[in-house]
Length: 440
Image 1 (tube, rainbow, N blue to C red):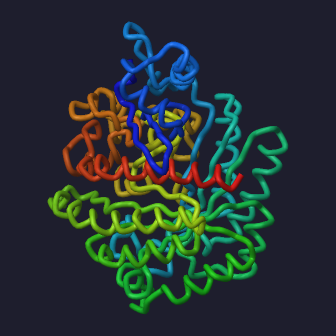
Image 2 (cartoon, rainbow, N blue to C red):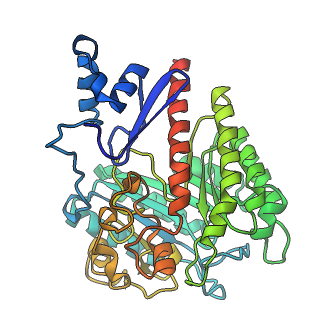
Image 3 (cartoon, rainbow, N blue to C red):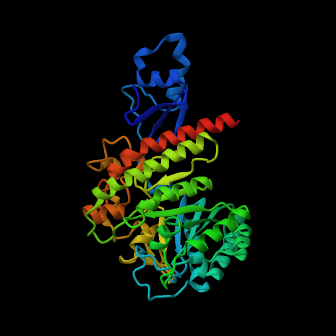
């Protein structure tokens, strides 16, 4: 029988399939195989035996008495850690939805704190036999603390890379302070980077102004062009809110025409007072449909490569029992060495600090800030356990769920949006696979 969460479709003379959690991701099929997957009763011995073998191998069908299970998150198998390093609380912009609560604190991380972090990380890697580390330099505006970023980039090479540990460094910047010196640093240390951009011209300037009220788009655009001329391809991070939603169609065309990867995040409320999710979702439908219609055309014309994420939706090759790794293998360390579960939850109690005796993972696993985080995974949420998309969205952002529903272990208030857009994203991914094959 076909796996319960398998989604299929047809496009340009091909079939495609995707099952949330399946380690093959979006799969391209010939039409006969796709139609056989949809209706196994059409099976013909000589014609379809190899097709059945393929479908079994790709875990799209299974014996009726042997359903496919995905193992939930287990601390014992965690071999990686992701760290959001808040290297400064200072920033040159004044975004109205910023999650930094104490903007009067202009302090930046010191070399001493950075060294304490690296020593703590070394101990964590050794005790838990970790193989992969991702460090995201963030803030505030992280480019305002260049010396700490250079120090850490130098040290991770000596302490980890030279000892066989894979390191991924990322810079999350507003893009206003990037210059030729930063471009050289990004290349030298192989630091990937993302620029926050909420729209084109007035749409970005409305939500991401300088502290004096002036718009930031002109400078960001100038620096973005400079980076691309130097062969760097940044990712773009956009937060869609009530203020910039009407400008999203223009932004989508801008980003797709530049062939940049981009992520659209949706407004995250931490207060619990936001009651407009349903109406906000309805407003989101048109700009997202418009974006994906334009993406479809650009992919067909081989002018763009599909590289996009919407909110907490994952179309990759693994099951997502939670929407992200907070509380399991990911944490935040701020500019003074305090630890938190999420960068958007830095207004909550700290879960520990760098001077604690436990490892980073142990501190995370013993946190009491969100005590219900570990009680259930998405396949145990009431409204999620029967949903075929559950292992793609992980139930959505835990903090959004908490503010909207009073618990981390519930379906996202954006559930309606996810269900509508996931099939569109799968289709675009399948189209990209076709176009890539045609190039070869």
